[in-house]
Image 1 (cartoon, rainbow, N blue to C red):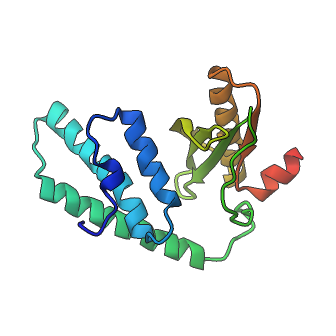
Image 2: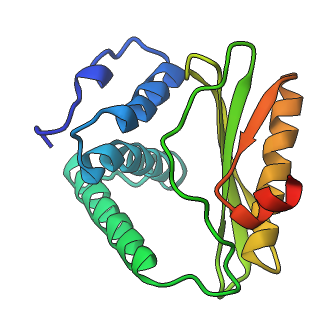
Length: 189
C-alpha cells in the first residue's frame, strides 16, 4: 500500500466530488501500474460496503479486511480483463473501436464517454458514463442497470440513450458522445 500515490488524496477537507476527481486523475499518471490505478476505486467500493454493513446490519468490518478484499478485487479484475482480452470476439459481440487516448473537447463543448456491460448468461446489462468539460474536469458520472437486453449491441445503444438523457437533464447543449462499440458508432454516422 505504501507504494501507491496517495499524496493527491491526502487532503481530508476536500468534498467527495473533488476526491473522486482526484481518483479519476490517477488514471492519467504515467508510470503507474494497472494495479495502482485500480486499487483506489476498489478501496472506495469496499469502504462503502463496510459502511453499509455497519449502518444496516450493525456489522463491523476491520480495516485490514477491507484492504485484503480490495486487493483481491483488483487482482480478480485484472485477471478477468486478461482472460477477456485473450478470448477472440464472436459474431454476437459488438466490434470495439481501437483504443485511443482520451482527448478533451474544444472550448464550449462537453464530452460524454459511455459504455455498457452485458452478461451473456443472464442477459442483464448495465451502463456507465462520465461527462467532462474542455479542461478535462469531470462534471457528472454514473452507472445504472439496463435490465434484460437481447444483445451486447442493444446494451451499448441503451447506454448511449441513458448518457444522452443524463446530459439533457443537466441542461448541456453542446455534447460529444464517445463510445467504443464500432457497430453502433458506424450505424449512427
